[in-house]
Image (cartoon, rainbow, N blue to C red; front, top):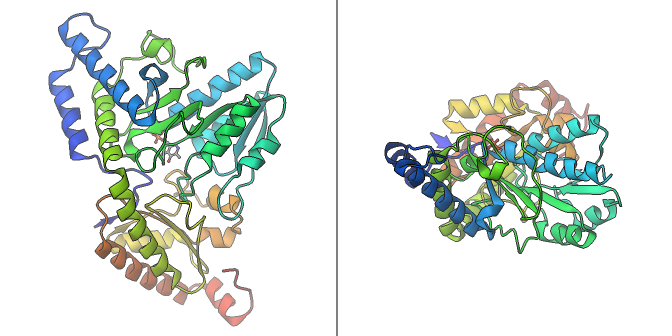
Length: 394
Ligand SMILES: *Cc1c(COP(=O)(O)O)cnc(C)c1O
């Protein structure tokens, strides 16, 4: 089996599993309890907060633990919106290819009267700082632009966008779920006010993540109840998950340079191999992209069939994000970079991981070549393209 869907989720690292199990076995107290085992759990929690803060250049008190990336995105955006509303600022800037946790939250705010500007991401899948600057108005309360895209892997000029927001005095949030643990992220150097992260995208457990909010930013609670997380996120903390998340992040950070170099070489080999397939195209910028991300469109085929046949050959991949596959709509990300519906349907995302090998990559190239040729052999769309009845786009 070749697992090439690390953008959907990653396998937990052995160190993270070990930490999780040992906390479950030995530190099972409630961190809010005052007796020994409760206080030990509290220590585990606060150590995790310190470790995570250190990795991203934050202070421990600026980290709020959440149930994952989606919750962190919701809390960041809704907090900024509430602050904006109080000050009569109801304009938010984002991009057309954000994760649905961002886009759907913005849709909800639109119904409440907010004005939402979704910036164009261009054919290379990148938003520029100049475009953000041009879109900022007197009533803008938030800019939210993702660090790296989950489908096409493109990395945004976050530091420059953050600098523009600082200069214009507008809050800046970034969904860094795909970036954290994979490429360098430092909230201070990158001028970030709020940042979302999720453990299961960097070899930690599912169902746990965190929100960084620069001190001084008033967060609103999504969940009311006890006074956990300085009153900003009620509910007994997921201590084993949080400890495992911190362990996974430290490990990912320590190995980042080595893993990124290996993955970039594998990624480029895979891109080169797949580019040999006629009428195919890489989606997103070739250079400013995550080390493990490859995303292609193949003309004249249908992504879902491609995935099923690859699965038969033992290769696990995706046609977009896990949230959109299963529906027949083409990916909003591919449409945002200007792929037409028919072409966007024939897409394939391969996201390599730390244990991917060159043999894996070579097997993937052969399998994709075979499957694409096979699907084209009986595709009416392909027949029309070849006979000149319709025109090739790629
Ligand atoms: C996975 C992902 C999320 C959602 O994180 P969960 O922890 O699964 O809720 C949000 N944004 C991006 C970019 C992602 O890749």
